[in-house]
Length: 126
Image (cartoon, rainbow, N blue to C red; front, side, top):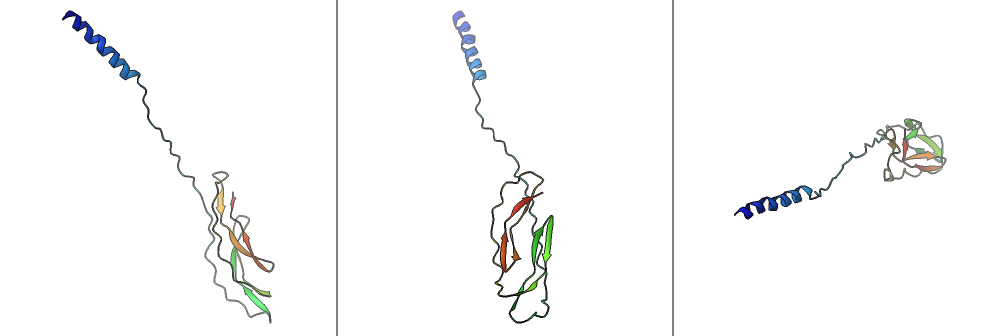
């Protein structure tokens, strides 16, 4: 009996130490908040009534919004001598990663340039 009493602590100590020394494997997931993207959407179109046609062979270029410097500016409609095709549909662009938190996204848009529509690609501005 004396020997068995001495064996009990000898059996429990390694078990206790094994429990304390066992490595704990936990998966740590660090979630960062999604980047805040500010998009400067263009305002709704302004309704324009075209003035009388300038003459034979003219077509109306409708007014549209154009990004200039730090904001959207309305480009008034105008008569153009020659053919004017309708403004093409908006091109869907993927917004890239902002260069800094101070930047905002300017969506791509069409503008009338020369004798046709020109696509201005979306870009970051600050």
